[in-house]
Image (cartoon, rainbow, N blue to C red):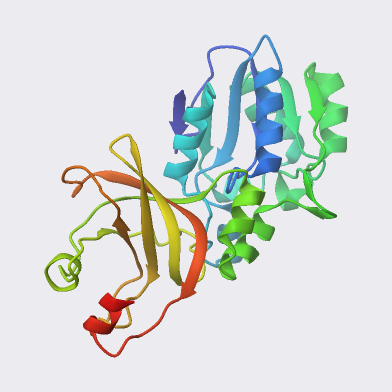
Length: 291
């Protein structure tokens, strides 16, 4: 996959079929759209997105994401997408006329010969661009347009907002159902406070999630861990370790069953499968160990 980020000066080398969006979570609705993208034969597949969530720049509020930029890049590469463009979201881009956006960026720079979008797609200044505009421009500019209907969970649209709600309640099993795959946290294993091995009797793997990563409700989860190309069963605690004295940062700490070798400094993927209990402060480390 060719990855293009943080530049407005690029030109794709071949005709493409393009889709646009944040793809936060790459949920079942996104997957339906992406599979259509890949099934549109004859063109290379290309995704247009922004390197910073537009809402956070428009509102000034920090945005959290289910899938970080690094995780999104990993997911799209794994799917076999040919091009991923993360365009810088500047003030000029925010104010861009939607017709100009389609003509100058999607058609000219990304060489779109086809586009695959959802029925509620929006783009350009104040989100004025929509499916109706794309349908009109497709005739003028000569690209094919495919509008993919949303996936539903019973009567509710599957969306990143829906998944965030379930994560905030600790309902990772439901979130995973909506995602079509386990909710995951990627990170490099760092040295913690060395309490797990020496004082509790079982070593744990600590990762520090990015500040913009949307975490589920603090607590303990049944998990599966991908480390060095192999899956292991695990138990993961997410939170601030209230039993341990001090101002602890939010962390993801996992006891991995029967892990092979030293994984310090290595990238791992922690997949949450089921909520066990909320975060709890114990009277002592011994009580924590017993639990």
